[in-house]
Image (cartoon, rainbow, N blue to C red; front, side, top):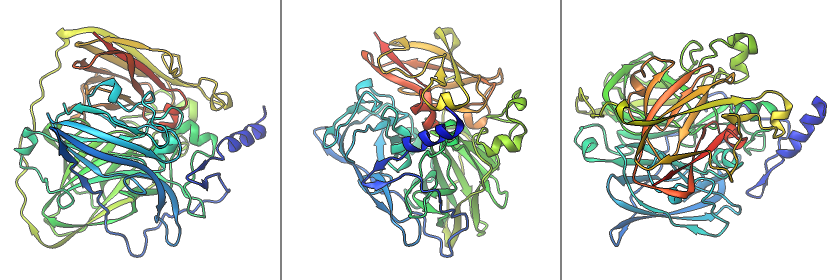
Length: 511
């Protein structure tokens, strides 16, 4: 197959029809890189409290299609939960019993995964818990999480990237007694704001353009427009002196380094699965696809604080160390997306202080207490090697995206873990680009990165970790509470096109 034949075959394979609208590439995009003349107010997803029935908190979720107005005068076919795009923020409390009634109204098979939650495999929402069109799936479990922000998104085999890209995702906020007593900003939508980041690419007719090239599938789908809770460069009018922003990187492939245009400092207070032991003062923070972080920014100076994306540090996390010869210099690697971004600059969010600002509590010196990892309890060390082939054969399903040399197989259990075991998972990346590695069911602690202890924002509980090219990251976790020898959990790269192409494996927890 020559290059032209391959390109034609790939184009044909991506002429998808979803939501009754043609999504095939028409050769023309709508670059919307300039700020709109009248920026929108930041939309805040509704906070869904559910309802109590027989000691359980019930949430009704409808997976549906619709249209959204991202671009002036154009309607974009989208997917959402309880609405045309994105979904409500689910408000949970540690220790309560919940039931989720998920009805599939999108017209094709899908799933809904509770990313970061510790729960039985039957309730995980991975590729084995398929919801057929018109059916309702009803998982139930007890919330066993520390206070943090988690999220939900589709996880259908080979279609996770497509369904997530069109908007079927939402945040989950879990509270516990420790967080309630920390005196952090907690007025949802006022001084405690979820910020869902997603980069998109549009066709001229307003439809979303998805994975139309070899590069999109090899490097992951990146866009030229950043949506923030579904809006472009929105404005948040601050009424309090300190604002808590809960960031979720819901991009398919882009790693986002965030900071303020005026170089102001802020404090990072939380990661994926917990508050940090202490606040970390910094001027930037990076999150890869699937990761979350929370910050406190002080706007008592009354000045506009413009949140922007910053270039990733090629010499730092997710670097191309030792691989300069493979893809040329840093600019070439960035343009190809081999560093986790493509060098684009985005205006993300403008915070405008409005009127006399309400006072805010001082930031506590300590936020939470996490026991030190106990290596004496480790019963097994498992090793995982992430790799990706290069060239057309990989794009034609030749098994180029692998973990330990194998692509995903729904009929194969890759690892079997004993219930109650504490294990070290050693994740090595031998590919030429970084991969965010996500493990279902558990929260882990990072032991080290290339032998060095984790830096501040990575010192809390995690479920996703970015592993740079040439890096080895060791994590430790205990697999407790739930055993099921038949139903597996997943581990995978959270660049969704890589996951769909095979960089995923399965493990069971067995008594």
